[in-house]
Length: 135
Image (tube, rainbow, N blue to C red; front, side, top):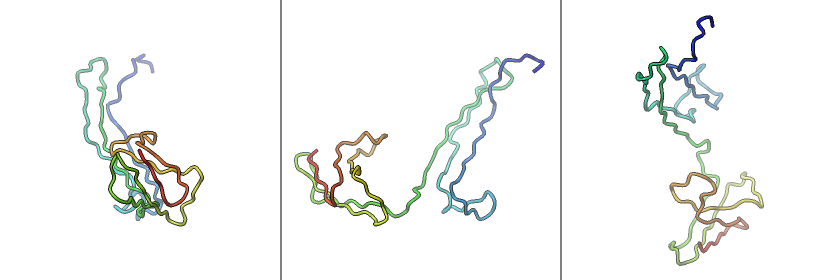
């Protein structure tokens, strides 16, 4: 530019949700059932204290809610008996027939607050429809 200005902060946040569903009722409109991702702007702040540009920086905090793509569970777990740290536990499971299986399949026990697949408390390799663990 001829003004030789310093790069400016952006003064707006542009965001868009791209839906996976192609069956929109009208162009750009999705029913509640068709939407799988919901984004909510929780906080939008213009930082007026920055004085090095006529554009003031902004920040935004968004909430993201994902609906599961599958409404029927692919695997159902049926724990047997009471669970305690002192005793072995047995879990029986069943999977829908169309779920492909692999020799690498495993079932993990996670705390409610887990954030990563490696945050399991214990796991067992799937060999048949019964899993036993003593952890």
